[in-house]
Amino acid sequence: MHEQLFVGAHPDGRLTVLNRLLILTILLAVITAALATEPSLPAEWHTALLRTEVVFGFIFLLEYLARIYAAAEQPGSGSSWAKRWHFIRSPIGLIDLFVVVTTLAPLMVADAAILRTFRLLRVFAVAKFGRFSYAVKELWGAVVDRVDDLIITAAVAFVLVLFGATALYIVEGDIQPDTFGSIPRALYWATITLTTVGYGDVTPITPLGKFFAAGLAMSGIAFVAMPTGIIVAAFSDAMQRRRDHLIEDMRKHLEELDIEDDKIEAKIAALERGRGPRR
Image (cartoon, rainbow, N blue to C red):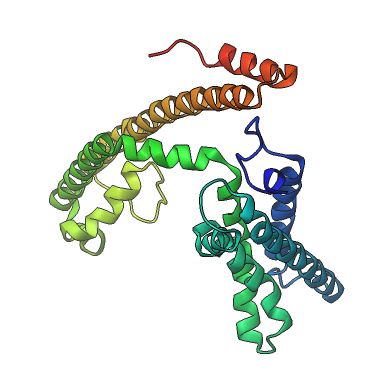
């Protein structure tokens, strides 16, 4: 049960069939919770959606109890109950408990306002995805590894935004005082322009103001590319490290069992072909 429920416990490190079914259940539960907030749906639809959410709630409850039971098989020292208590207090265990409570609580709450709040919170079932994907952890690790580069990028962005706001304050502060009458007022426009969102609710009207706006928008394209490239490079390095660790773990597992497993050997060979040259 431990290998089926806990990601990474299986020898080949991949998601088990049960994990994939749980991912599908989470997706369906989130979609159902989102649909339940649509007031234009017929009453019978809302009744069916509520019943479906209750079913998902009991599925999540069974999963949560099964994880508590299987946590005793976690490697390491300590008694079975100590390992289970550690899982209950862990971030993953708390997320599971939160999802179960928010899904089943409407069955015990009569107040309409509280019921609507719980329906909204049930969308947070998507948080359970965190434990099914190493990519989330690797992406966070990539951000941490490149935090200095990202800080420099953020500083450059701040300078560009401040420059754009100052330029429009000088050029159009007297013409559009409500929008560009001060640098803090112009900061909103400069931020929206630099990020290339461009809502259109605030726009310069003078030729010189439009010139600065065009320059800031072009700078925004480069600004978006900078942090994206930094994170992508770090993420690629992190996934390369994960692939190397996975190969080492699989080989160590085979050595401990002192057996030859053709399927695992084939997966190791496939991983080695895909990891590319070392840097």
